[in-house]
Length: 212
Image (cartoon, rainbow, N blue to C red; front, side):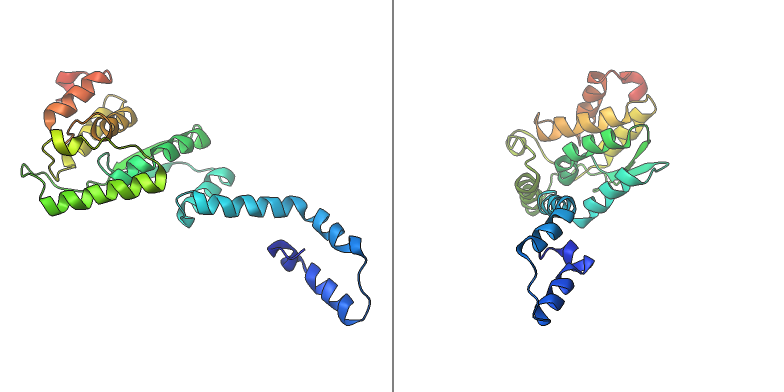
């Protein structure tokens, strides 16, 4: 066997010494080695496939290893509901919530773009659209491209972030975060507009007056 684990275990060195001494190992010698490391080899292959398909980042592998083997007091997730990569990670975050169980997940709003009433410049629109394409190609996330035809996009994510924090005062922070994502990426609604955020808040059961 020439796998990484067998190299580490010194199995190849043993075979090399046998060859150099003129004593060829029996045919089943390698089979015995392979049997001894079969499970480990399979685990190694699964990890390698996992690394290639799971957004191709070592950061996520480290995160999953941490979540699987070491208990944590709290998991901090820095995000923005209008960040397209956060939308691409949404299914991953659902898995994270299942894995951590009772461990609290604290959402920290990153705030990608300051308050602005100005229309999003054309070059910025092209940049954001390009990010949507990359996220979709990488994660398979769905986007409703009618947003760019039916809405007046603004480069302002602060209102959406504040809305998430406000929903937290009614114990609905995560629900608001995900509802804003759906409104933006699937339902062709602009989370830069206060009216949209108020409607979304009411839809998830928040007190509209208290939220506003």
